[in-house]
Length: 82
Image (cartoon, rainbow, N blue to C red; front, side, top):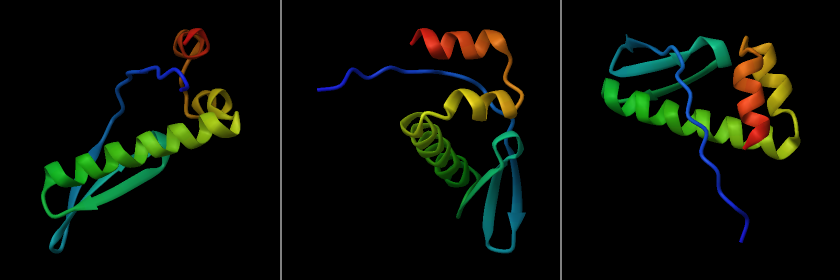
C-alpha cells in the first residue's frame, strides 16, 4: 500500500450567492464549486482542490502548477520533502 502524506496550506476563497446556489471560488487555482449553503459550497470546493492537487501530483506537474499559482520556494521545498 502506498504511503499517504498530508500537505496543509491555506487558500483565499470567496463565496457568492448565485440565485438558489452558493458559489465558492478559489481564484489562485482557478477553481470553483457550488452548494446549496455556503458551507456546502466550501466543502465541495475543498474536495475539488484535493482532486486537483492529486491529479497534478500524479501527472508530475504539481511543483510547476504551484509555482505558477504564486507559491514560493518555502512551500515548494516542503512539498518536495514530503
